[in-house]
View 1 (cartoon, rainbow, N blue to C red):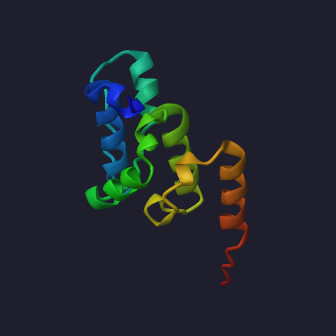
View 2 (tube, rainbow, N blue to C red):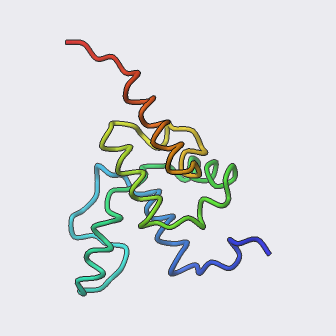
Amino acid sequence: MPQILGLSLECNLRPKIEFFLQDADTVDETSSFVDSDTEADNDYNEAISGGGGLTREQLKEFVLYQPALLSYSLENRIAPRVKIMRDNDISLQFSPSYVLSMTDKKFEKWLDMQTSSWSISD
């Protein structure tokens, strides 16, 4: 059975889909993926704040290319990489479809190539 079929819609898939569709520029500080007032949930919501900024069509293409994307950890893999990319002015929607499936070492190498090859002059 494919791994994605064993994932919970409410606890696993919905938060990831909402994250990918959420625009980092329009995040409301009070919005969250989990409705709870516990400190652990607040820490979780802070860790995954931001968003991928993808359209539904772009998300569809990402998932069709790499279905395993939805099985990756939102708080340990997806959100941290998207945040690192956003901090380096790299948009997820313009990055390769396989960027989230790279090993940590390959991701760091890819990120270094993206940021070191840019030339901005005044």
